[in-house]
Amino acid sequence: MFRHSSSLWYPVTSAKWHRKHSFESFSSSSLSRSTSEQQMKLVCKESPKEYLQPFKDKLEDFFQKARKEHKMEEIHLENAQKSFETTVGYFGMKPKMGEKEITPSYVFMVWFEFCSDFKTIWKRESKNLSKERLKMAQASVSKLTSEKKVETKKINPTASLKERLRQKEASVATS
Image 1 (tube, rainbow, N blue to C red):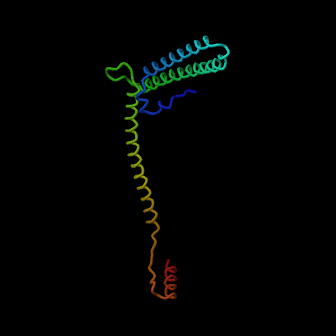
Image 2: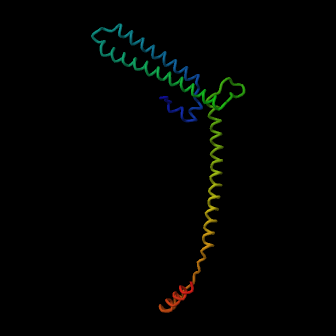
Image 3: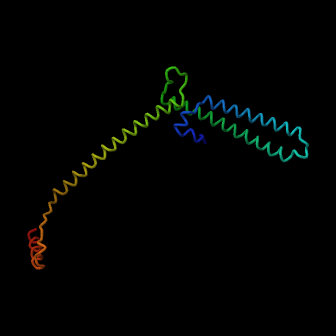
């Protein structure tokens, strides 16, 4: 499974990411790891055997894990670079004038502008669609109400109960 560091998913920090610097820092970490490994071997060589064993086994395990992790991270870095190049090729992006290669900052700048424009257009179209649907709903309501005209007759609240019942019966009989 291809795995990214969490910073590659955020445009602001990704825009600051430089492939050249990543490979340089990666190789410098490899150098410092190998230097530490040499120092560990020197300490093991010069230490008395009675004090050597827990230290030597633990550090050998540590450096073995470090080598494996370093190799995996190197693969992830290469995959990230290939994915970036594939993405740039897919969108047909060309480097800015005066630059030899496309930088992530340029890609994310273009991507941000696209997303911003898309969001604006999306909101505008959503409003237009909502207005259209509202008009359709109002038209259907007015059509239904025009078909079913309801006559309302006010009953005199001050009239007696018998009088109100007669008025209701008269209105039911006429309908």
